[in-house]
Image (cartoon, rainbow, N blue to C red; front, side):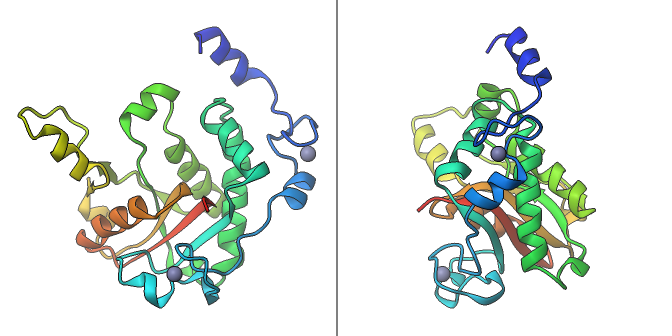
Length: 229
Ligand SMILES: [Zn+2]
Ligand SMILES: [Zn+2]
């Protein structure tokens, strides 16, 4: 995308991807009609689970305690996310963050008092270079604003720096899904709300959770926009 195209994309008022109405990337009416709530289920295996808790059998993986998923990764949700990540319509972050915050508020009533710190699952630097922005960081900022919580970009992806030697590929593969905490002092003893846009197997989410627990976070929960089936 050229600089000019960037500017045009940025200046143009968003229109609803579903009905074309000007104003939001997905208008309220279309969101109600086309975004099917994921419901209170285990984020990993889809089993019904009260309070969106990670179910007993998925808990042993080191997963977050509770994960609030907004919807399945299909139709309108998928289009909205593509528009945001690849079509560079950054205004869509507002809508996605809004839907994620609503899901969290509905499901986490009483938990808001935990004074979560919002932490994005970091995007790989190669992807940031490709797209020109860090989509989970922006989402986390918008969610923190809506929920009036603190937002700290405290995770760092490992295995992204150039390494020498014959086993480089192997090492990179091992590190592909591992994270380190940048500032343990800010995480220690705190309740963390991890933010990610899509989840498939959950490997990334679990790796991020492990890093936060290793840094002595008090608890780790998460909010995800869409679950890939
Ligand atoms: Zn609409
Ligand atoms: Zn499960």
